[in-house]
Image (cartoon, rainbow, N blue to C red; front, side):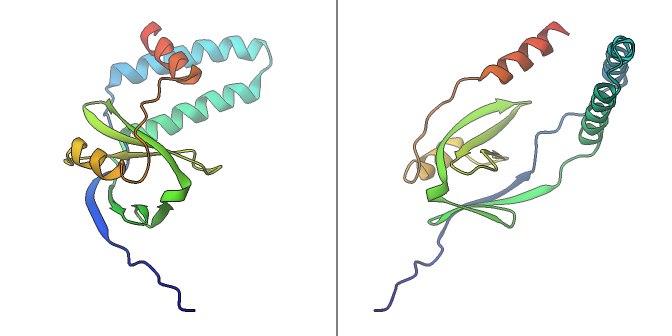
Length: 161
C-alpha cells in the first residue's frame, strides 16, 4: 500500500521580533540595583550567599535582554503546524491559543501538550489578528486564559515597586 504524504502548504507567514523589547533608562536600573543591594544586605546577614548570587544573575540576564534588541524571526502557519524559525510544532502537539497585548505589541500565545515548551509566545508584528485567529481556529481552539498565580504576583510586585 502506498502512503500519501500531505504536502506542506503555507497558510500565512510573517517576520517579527523574537521577543518583546523595551529599552530601560538609567533611573530604572538605579532603582533595581538599589533594591537588590538592600535585599542582598539582609540576605548577607542571613548567610544566604547563593540567593544573593541568584538575584544578581537574574538582574544581569534582565539587563542583557533589555539592552540588546531582539533579532527578527520568521514565523509560518502551515497545514501541518507552526514553524518558528527552524522549529516545527505539529497541530497534534498544540492545545489552544489566545492573544494579548504587551508594550504596544500583539502577542499570540499557544499552549502546547509538550513538557517543554509549555507555551509558544509569538509576536504578530504587522499581521492582522483576525486573519491569524481565523486560520488557527481551523486547527486548535481559541480559549482566552486568565492570569495564573505567578502572573498575578508579578503584576502586583510591578505595581507595588
